Amino acid sequence: MRTFLITIVVIISLFYTATCYAAETTIRYKDQPPPSAISPSLSIGGGSDVCVVVRSGAIGTGIFSGSFGTHIQDMNCERLKLSRGLAQLGLKVSATAILCQDLRVFRAMLAAGSPCPINGLVGKEAKAKYIELGIINENNHIMVSPNVVNGGINKPRRNDYGQPTD
Image (cartoon, rainbow, N blue to C red):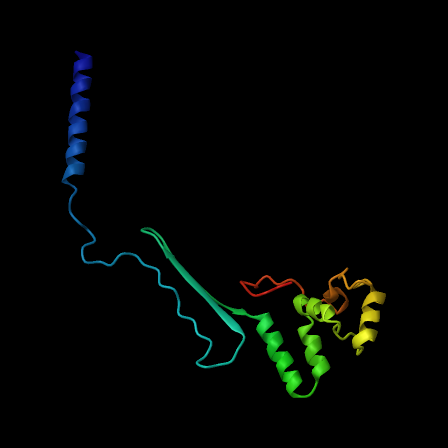
């Protein structure tokens, strides 16, 4: 008898639970927009000639939505602008030295037979100085990063989001 009574109680509770869930058909969020995340529209000034890259993004789910945006300084663009400005002032060696902070330019100049200037030296004198400092060997192979000797100008950046680094 006790088993029969427990069985009846379980059946009634299951039936009641099923009925309650089946009756829950009303839409509580009618005419409300779904959750969304809109990416921020970042600008760096209309027509401004600046070396800044804009990054923004957004993600949205049914529960959580979020967006972000940031400005990132483009060091390679700045290097090119500085070099161009120095060249326009007639400071060609200084302009070349700025570009030589990029390891790719350093390698290209070395391969072309005109090494980057160092301490005011150019040409064969500069190559001899690089060999003396152990930056390159007799066969123009780079032994140490030139930026270590040149004051570490090209220290690794954490904000290089797609910009070239050495």
